[in-house]
Image 1 (tube, rainbow, N blue to C red):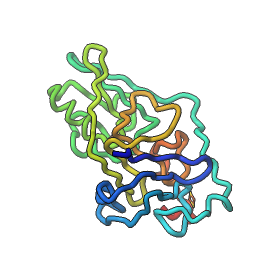
Image 2: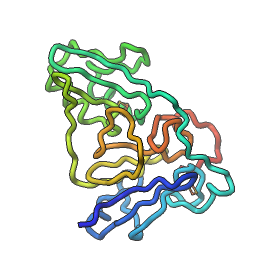
Image 3: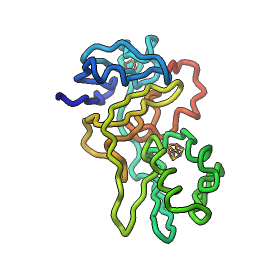
Image 4: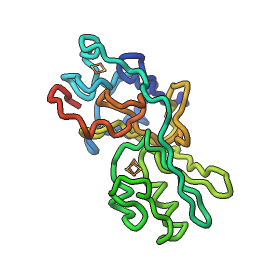
Length: 213
Ligand code: SF4
Ligand code: FES
């Protein structure tokens, strides 16, 4: 079987390649609408196409720059007696799933101490990490990073947010973010992430009406 792949085109859209009838039904728009795609499809990632989620060439007029701007990722590490949890702020899509579903572990206060591992079992901590859609949260036991492998492909283009990708989808990039899971990640669709092609939650601070994503 030919593997579904995503190619971030320099200063341009995301090219989704090798779509088949089989994996097409796992691609959703705004959480529920299946979208019609060709075997190769170009998804806007400058945030300004008038034909979302597809690219309409606006990035050319707008001089979209897809360069990654951050020099260093922001990494926080937390230890409990059995598990070490790592949070890579630079790939956090801000879904707030952690805060909503596991409030005893994650606090909505944005401070260095926003993760508290003392009140929950290791099992619950691991469950919370596995529910993170971006893989900004990861964990290791005895210095070995534990990475769940997601095989079933699912691409979800989220309203006013990133593209959420799960499964055996080959993202064609040279350098991955630290601790990132290659079978679970979120990609910038607004164009302003400092850590492209990954979402870093920059979309939340956009006020400009010219963004259409
Ligand atoms: S992406 Fe992960 S770490 Fe970031 S807010 Fe969502 S669940 Fe929490
Ligand atoms: S990337 Fe082409 S219009 Fe947005």
